Amino acid sequence: MVYEPRVVRSQDMGIVIVSHRFGIGSTFHKSYGLLEEEHKRKARAEKFAFPCHFLSISISFCDVIQFQILPPKTDIEQSIVVFDYTQMDRILKEERNYILDMIKKIKATGCNVLLTQKSILRDVMTDLSLHYLAKAKILVVKDVERDDIKFITKTLNCLSIANIKHFREEKLERADCVEEVSLGDGGKIVKFLGFKDIGRTTMVLIHGSNQLVLDEAERSLHDALCVIRCLVNKKFLIAGGGAPEIELSRKLGAWAKVLQGMESYYIRLFAKALKFIPYTLVKNAGLNPIAIVTELRNCHAQGEINAGINERKGQITNILEENIVQPLLVSTSAITLATECIRMILKIDDIVTIR
Image (cartoon, rainbow, N blue to C red; front, top):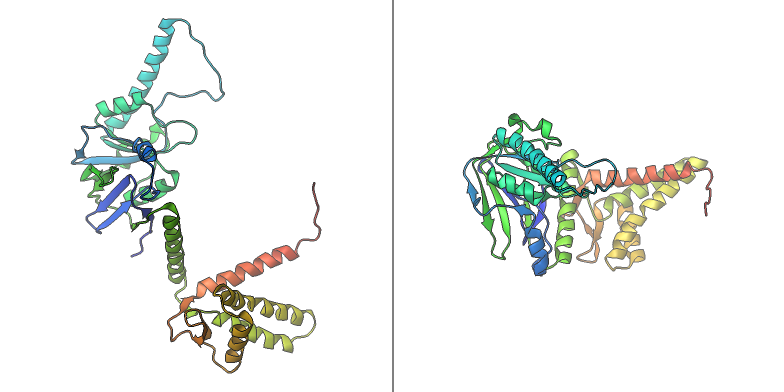
């Protein structure tokens, strides 16, 4: 069973979804480390419109919305000046009625938990909307990041709703409990428990003292997950340490000697380009690239096809015995994409300079 992974960070407010079926916890929102300033922490706390009397909801029906619980706006920017207090009251009354109609439609479906996507153009809802939602006993989690919406909907096995007209009872997801949990650092999370049909997702929680450490840890985890994805797509492992590239370069060099004309020239240059991969690997390790690559070529010429660069020992060893392997798809994809890029460049006939 394959789960979609998600890297999340500690010391942040977020949403936690726990499945009793799989024993999985999923947390959303990113963190800025333990050294976060207090005013940033307070600003993030405003994301969660969680009325004080909603500390726990035993049986909840949740959904994710991407529309705004606000009165509609005109398509063009304009200002309306009203001098009559009667007209002003009428405008405010119409806005209240419009918001109330939307909330009544949401309440009629049995929904009591809403997750709203963050909008970059305007607020998703106003204080008046939150007031009416609280009176309707509907919990609201505001400003869920756009990148997290896809993961949340996949975890909840539901579709995000983009219009109030599509808000129907069959699109809701049932949870046994939704509760607010306070963290030790003063933050809060909203925990969802007991989804019957939770999606196949999982969570990786990383800790760090600052933003730099968290970013580096997330990049490392992303690289590791990409390697696993390559292995799932093509279940073959080959030796690492520059062994396949130098062996392929040697084979192509021998083949180029058999060919004639332009084909021989192309193959020879392709073989020469492949040598730069182990050369760069040695250079990044702080070793002598000329001596190491020459020794590596000699080992492969003697039939040691699994000989590769061992950065820890600083010498050429049998890479398979050292358990240094990589997915086949990593090497084939790199070579294929590089070749396609060069072919695209060679198709350029003229370059027009524009000042």
